[in-house]
Image (tube, rainbow, N blue to C red; front, side):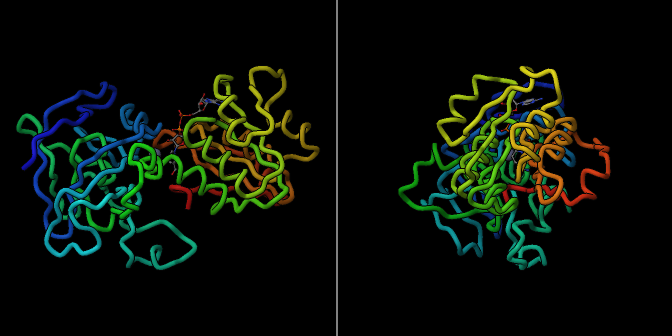
Length: 317
Ligand code: NAD
Ligand code: ZN
């Protein structure tokens, strides 16, 4: 058993608290990782508010980390102690019909099918002050050591700088993949990205890499615009600078609407605005932001009937 520090969320609505926790050794098929770096994704903030479904408290959040394998359980063959790894918040069991479909990055062992608050054997490897602490998506990277199933770990290059590549654990892969894999942005196309956090900026990078000729970045915080331009945005607009709805502004700027739009905030109103901003014939809108658990969106069906496509993405497909 390793004793180390972790950021524990004891209950919804309470801030994280840094605690000393005990991390049990990996059982068969599991890997214990020394987490060297972790990013903070807005989804971690959603957990603290209690707005992610199927999360149980107390919990150690964090799902955008990188580290070094400390020890392995019986039967683990894909990694060994000392390997640099990124834990995967969407598992890859390699056996379910989703994993076997090359078009999909999703896995039926993910939390949309069964809770990932305990490891697959339904026990936790974390305790704190005598209490069992839950895992989050089986990764819990806000701990100095964590235990994850072997099929939730990707081995990476030994030279990878962990404080940078931790972003592949969620934010970068999600945004970049949303442009490349989910939208399949074409060269010369026009894109709009709503929300310029770590994930939205990664969408901008993906659109640029795919050869988009115009990338319009949308945010209510203009401090995000310099970084967005550096990464490939051609125009940056703040919806609060306009009297008319942002979808009308984008439609006017582009003639008939953008070819691809991405919602990377997590609000119903911006999801509808993003859908309405892409052109009615062939436009593709990708939903990335996470809405509060239990929310619903209502749309004018004509938005889709005429030919727009509305898609979502988990971890960038
Ligand atoms: P973030 O908080 O860093 O960035 C959000 C940005 O949206 C901010 O720059 C903010 O100023 C801007 N914003 C807020 N309200 C706005 C509005 N009304 N109009 C325009 N801009 C507005 O968040 P992040 O970490 O980049 O994550 C973005 C979203 O993506 C979150 O909802 C997160 O949960 C979700 N997410 C989804 C996946 C997935 O697999 N689908 C993966 C990671 C994150
Ligand atoms: Zn995330």
